[in-house]
Image: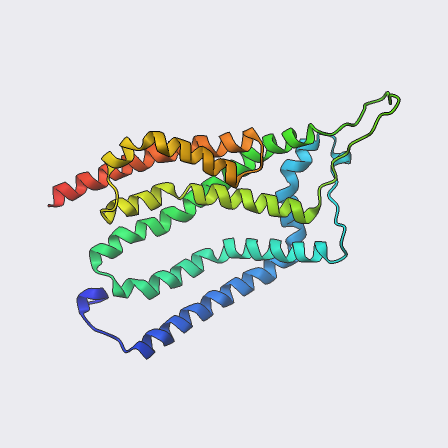
Amino acid sequence: MVGAEANEKLPLLEHLIELRRRLLWSVLALFAAFLVCWSLAGEIFEILARPLIEAFGDKTDAKLIFTSLTEKFFVDIKVGFYAALFISFPVIANHLWKFIAPGLYKNERGALLPYLVVSPVLFMLGALVVYFGIMPLAWKFFLSYQNLGGQEVQENFVEIVALPKVSEYLSLVIKLIFAFGLFFQMPVVLSLLVRAGMVSAEGLAKKRRYAVVLMFLLAAMLTPPDIVSQIGLAVPGMLLYEISIFCARRIERKRRISD
């Protein structure tokens, strides 16, 4: 028998040794993925920059610059690290699960395991929404503030050209991906709160109006200061809130049946 049902208490030292072993394998997986991703940092950055390149329209005008000799080097390191974290997450999550699972009862393991599967899927869905849906619209909005002048240059004309820095662009992209990815965790978080008895489906439904206001406030804080990004985050957020209510009702229905 495994898990908490076995009622076997391992010494603290053995828990620490097990934790160290799991952490070591997780770090090694992250480091190995980092070496691979760092060697491909240029190609990965080109994928991240593709929405910006397409937003320029004329690809000959699409340029990103760096103003410090070390800037591009550290950008490549960040790209490699974020990509490695994404790739190695299944390995890290697997070791985390194997460390905590023996301390859980069978019903607790059965309740928690689906969330470990759904959570990265929802994060990926949020990243895809921002990459294919929000970035192209947002970048076109910001590039519309250029003042290129066309063929005829008028008197006292000042040309305004966008020359984004690679470090600032990467920071903005990562911020958007994480904002949408974490926002898409709403059904997971609220479902866990319902299982814990901290909230109810009826309570979530009654607070729907406040949730809508909160989502627009969070969208304003987590996204760039343009209406496209903010609406693009708030609208899926409202849909996810309704999905969370549906999941909460199913959880409560199953609980009543089991009781």
